[in-house]
Image 1 (cartoon, rainbow, N blue to C red):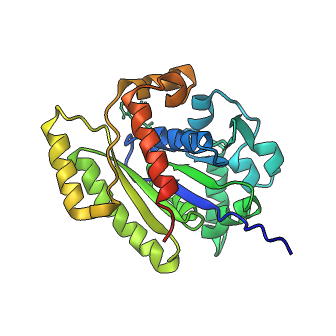
Image 2 (tube, rainbow, N blue to C red):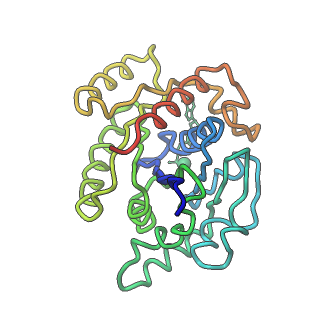
Length: 257
Ligand SMILES: Nc1ncnc2c1ncn2[C@@H]1O[C@H](COP(=O)(O)OP(=O)(O)OP(=O)(O)O)[C@@H](O)[C@H]1O
Ligand SMILES: [Mg+2]
């Protein structure tokens, strides 16, 4: 019998039912940071926008949709985008996965869990970038993920979305108690904007230790994708790189209870 302990795979969904709160930016720079920290990490793009592959400068022939639909094997679909950083790309073909889930009489929520089950033991982290919606694919994501990280921009409308989203997660947890809300990550923090500070204080009052230190507004983060680079490659000394590096360290240390 092998004495070597198999890694527990941490499956982290980056999600919120509101657009433009830095989900993809967070998923990419978190996953890339984990890989740089020596943790084999798979990023899975579950958005029909399919931004992760172009953002990392790769164009794989297949992705998560083809793997779920059994049109490609994991070996064909998974590409190594950087050292220890692996990718299952998203894109329009995910519409076919949604149709497949919709056709099933029962069990559709386990679609992703079934398709990704064979990956246990190969990675330390799976980071799932999700679309700003609450559809069958998002539900299937929460039946696979074990942790949820919510990037929330510091504006009133995003706060409303956050409250609704946490209620829906609560409902899912009734069926899937192993799913933990890991962190609420404030994004686009700007000290010069009074609303930013006020909302941060409110979040701290409501969510206490679930609230992680904010990611500051940093123009380098919005420029990096044009160069197909992560923030560590494009601007390693920027505030964005510093903030995401800090997030990576917290996520590594602050694992499941
Ligand atoms: N901290 C930041 N400072 C400045 N710009 C940022 C920051 N974080 C993200 N951005 C930029 O904001 C825009 C939206 O970010 P992103 O695409 O990550 O959001 P999203 O939540 O994934 O959006 P969607 O809901 O459409 O998937 C992008 O242009 C991104 O480069
Ligand atoms: Mg996105």
